[in-house]
Length: 170
Ligand SMILES: [Zn+2]
Image (tube, rainbow, N blue to C red):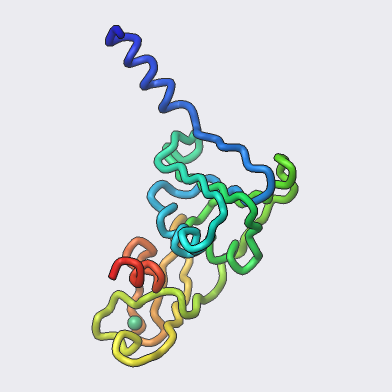
């Protein structure tokens, strides 16, 4: 194969978004690149047996690059949608029924997140006593910041670990 043809094929494959069309389920699109992993933990997608398609660093006109998650047979509920909006601001959520978009969910960023984040501050009381964490969500424009209710330190979404993420890493 000529180098020219090879280059062309590579370019085309980069332009083609892997769209495994789903029949009934949820499509989370326009996820800021790099955030899909956190959503996989947030939604516990590795722990159930729905077919999941994940695209990472896909080309996007609006974002440059984006991540994308398609989940067959799973419908996002409003609370989950709102949590997704904390970690993936601007992500679009579509519920698909019989291969068509049946509903577009417009999430609302919640004021707080309870019990799902581990505080990155090693001295925080939540890391030493059995206390459920509470984090206040602070809107910083395009990104959200999370402030621990107990130690009052603020963290970017990139700095935090979800409780489930930490459990699977240890
Ligand atoms: Zn803390």
